[in-house]
Image 1: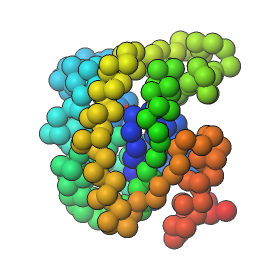
Image 2: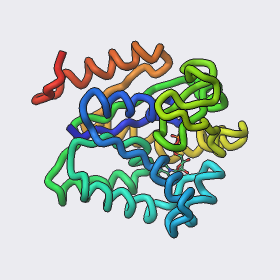
Image 3: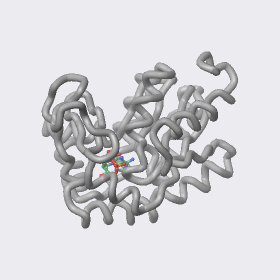
Image 4: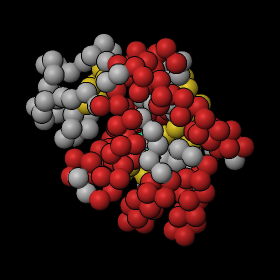
Length: 221
Ligand code: ADP
């Protein structure tokens, strides 16, 4: 099954992708994680992406499309795309790659959430730079403050989560560039809306129930 998880920053795309990856044995492809890793390595792509990511702006489509197309050509199927596509041009590029691979999208899960909840969540989010686990100091705290439950690595706050101005900037960019994708996938009959204001366990339940409707899904029930 080939999935997209769509929603504003802080809607829980990364958290739900981790769950989907484990539950359905999917490859999790997060553009945000990909860019952050390239920035840490200071690779040519990382150097180009850095200023955009840190300011909460989108990395130009040519750079993003290229890195994702190359990765998808290796993975081919059984993936969850988290943070891609985010613009209409990225939708077109993804369609082209999938056609060349003879693959189709199974479903687009849209995490629908209130803006106030997003701002609260992002300002208290911390992540593990190694395994990419996501915690929230108020909602999903680690067992030991500041330390990742999985690997004992020190948790960090992302630069783009550090001040309210950058968070608001990301929300604005999302509304202009990415929100129109919701209608586009709705028209194609692929969109399923998840109420992301709920508790984590209820969100998972809703996602599971949508996915159980997919034909050939071994994990039904
Ligand atoms: P969030 O969904 O919380 O904003 P991500 O980790 O998905 O966080 O993305 C972090 C940043 O990486 C974005 O603000 C943007 O700069 C860059 N980025 C991620 N995905 C894309 C994309 N599809 N197109 C352009 N830039 C992207």
